[in-house]
Image (cartoon, rainbow over all chains, first blue to last red; front, side, top):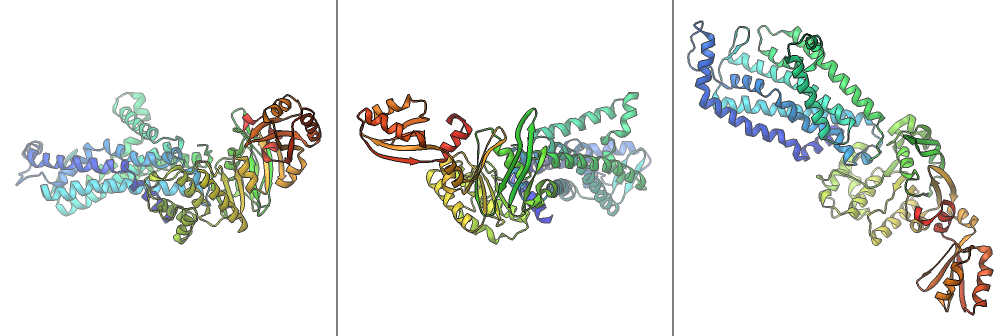
Length: 278
Length: 301
């Protein structure tokens, strides 16, 4: 299996499309960090205004942790798109390019090939988010420095630097798991068609529609809201609550897990039954 | 039998692409698989290699059912299905390394198969820089990678120049002499006649005839007789109007007449009565004649 995953990673790293996400992050992050460094005072004032007279803030609350926290909020819709660029290609491109005529006539099973492709997509997904973390936390620490993380969400949570690092690691880990669900969804679409654009459009369409459903305050939509997967995407946010709501995290991950397994199950069924005619 | 199909059937919509096809491919043979475009050759080959699932019937490779054992049954099979496609952004060698990893074999066999298919010096170049002929050779190289006992080749000389076609023909001969069974589909009847020991013909998904090449050609009474005469134009005018003349044309200054063995004396009589001097008559049986007699007109090829 390791050899098959290595094969898939060779394919992913050999395609220029796979680097769009990394290039995008490399262009966007310096801009955002620069924005924080020059416009941080304004944000600092907004934050301290919300804190009211309760706290006396010495120095600045603007640091790489707060910047990362805000960036994660802002990029939440866009990261799935970057992930679908690789996951969408995974199966569909091999079908479209006739590669399956070579690979599926060998003694290795279709199931193993499919699993290796999915795992390679997960590795790509994790790499993209780790790269994001490298910029916002790594380079961000150099540009903006570190310090306490102040989170205002139904109250105020102040995390000292050592705890902030741990919470950030937890948050990114949860974000990776969520994005793996997105990758699996896109992967499922990828088994159904013979072009890479379809799965990308299909996945993004579903995510956007789902966000609209949970955003519109209508009773009919509220009824189906618990079954809409994007409702559980915010599980990464739970890493910044105190105490950490582990049961809530497990519940959200379980729901996303059911979606992931279902999408993978459908992908397996479709791929194993698929006639390779092209 | 190294490869066997039993009652193999596949439909696409209402069209039956392959209809209850029974084939038996003996161990060590070079088996030609012929049929007009759309006759079901590719669908049959795809069912043999687990790319398409049959609606009915089974394919057995060394007694193992492809439908029951899936890709496990393809352990000793090398296949080249239609035009070979690879990851164009990777080198030929990297593509083969990936396939070697899939086969669970070490990469020491890669350079020899590249050399054998004439790609030894170009292995490190990206596939996107390869000509169609080179891709075809790489396709054959990947089929040989796992040292197969059975090679399934679908139009292996597609895109090759005459020299390349001869090299592939020679390679097939070499592989056959090493004991590898080769199942080959091709439109080039002359090629098939040169290299195959057995042949099967299908039309509309149904088996028309199958057996040893020699037996089938002997059984056929359709001959392409080469006739050398002193007046080609008159001879062709005299013969082409006869209903027992299957075809009549001039190739390299020689009259080629498609007739049955029984009609040869009649032909000689007509030519001599019309004061045409006949110097030689060489009756020949070709696969093309057999093909046309079994499957109809030339336009179907």
